[in-house]
Structure formats: C-alpha cells, structure tokens
Image (tube, rainbow, N blue to C red; front, side):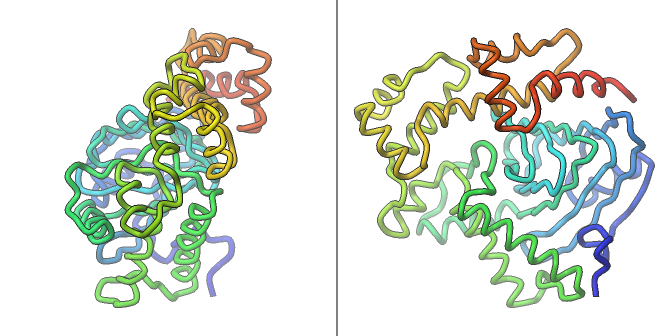
Length: 335
C-alpha cells in the first residue's frame, strides 16, 4: 500500500537533490534544456518523479524554494502543470497569468516560456507529445490542423470539465502510488487513457480549434459570439474597452452578449474581463522588481480605484496585493 506521507509518484523517482546544477540537468533530460535559478530564501530541495506512457508522461516536481524557470520554447511537447500547493507566475508567449490549485497552466511548445514557482509550489505535470496531440486533434475535427494548436490563458480546474480532468490525473497518480500504474508503454488500456486525457484537455480548455471541435461533435455548447468576445477581450486586456466595444467587435447587441455570457458562462463579459486583468496584475505583482508599486501595477491593468482593487484582489487570491508585492520583493533577488 502507498505511504500516505510519500510525495506523488514516489516509486517513480528520478532524483532528489540539493544541487541546482544537478536538478537542471536531470529535469532537462526529460523535458528540455532550460534556465533554473533559485531566487527564494529557503534551501533548494528538488525532486522529480516520472511515469512514462507511450504518448505522454506523468510527472511530479518540487524545488523547495522560490525558483525562476525559463525553458524558452518547449518545441516537442505540450506541458500541463497542475499545482497541488502554492502558485506559479506564468508567461507563455503573450499570455501571462498565475496557476494555483484552482487554475492549471498549459504551456504551448511554440511560444517561449518563463515561470516563477513559489517556494511551496508542488506540481503534477502532464507532458504530451506535440505530434501526438495534433494527430489526436485531427481525428476529432476530421481534418489536419492548418495552424499550431494554441491554448489561451489559465486552465480553470473548477469548471465541470476541468475538475473532471484533474480528478482523472490524480486518480492515475493514486493508482501508480498503489503499485497499479495504468500508463505504461505497450498497454492497450494505457493508450485508451492517454486518448481520454488528450480529449479531456481539448474539450475542457480554451484554444484556437475550440469552435471546430464543438462543431464536429454536434451543436455547439457555447455560442461563437461568446468565444469571439473572450478572444477579443483577452487580446485587448490592457486597453480601456467597454461592453459596447466588445459587442460591436462580435456583431451583436450588448444585451444579447450579456445574456449569452450569463447563460453559458454564468458571469458577465465585464466580469470575465476584470478577472483576466486581475490575473495579469497578480502575475506582475509576483514578478515585481524593486521600485514597483501596487498603484503602478493596478493602474497598468485598468484598476483606478485602489481600495476596490484591493478588495476584489483579496476575494480572488486570498491575500492583499500589497502582501503579494512585499513577498515578491523580499524574495526576488535572494540567492
């Protein structure tokens, strides 16, 4: 029986080290060459556990202290990062956001990536072969993708489909820890589970083939106008746009757009935009350099009323923006 005190995938440990160079080299042997710097106060205490399948792998990584990780372009694989604790500030191409136990990161291999993991950040990572995921997508949309598959923003693990995918991932980890690994090369069941994971990711998270995927599977569960509105707001998240601007961009009335968001997203367009801006502000606070201020960062992302910004920030992230900034500045340059 699995040891309840052991970290996930403990029976599949690749290494456990206090040496930064060794950790960088050993992780690179599974993923890709990358920059790895300790920027926190705590002792560097890294481990990597790895369970290989045919087209993907399950991994567990922790560093024990705040770290900067910059792999550039992953090139050959997509990487889904699910924090079990702590948080990470993510920059993947033009996307910046924070991942935590409620929001995963999905790293596109054709966009450069830089990340800062908090000291208590422990993550389960799903590495998916790029060609395999594109082949799987082609089968679902009945056509070869004509552009790189690109995921957008943080992956909501509290949504119905997001929660289901996370539950499946953690189930596979639990089975492996109990000595019953489902994912293994040559296993028919393992290959079917891999296909389920890839389908689950493609259905649960926003990407540039979401409309084609929905259309290929019957009546679209989400109106095109909602997806177009979300894409427009994410593309203009740093600009002063109003509901009428979004409605005009997608060719519907403001009232129609509001009703669609309420029905299919259980929110409003402006609440979606506000949350996207909060994610950007939080990422900037976590990656702040000396001289940065809450006021400057809040203003950058369109929050002019700083008391209200502090309130909604605390409601979303569980702490004040000032606390996040102070923690970032205290740790940023500690070696």
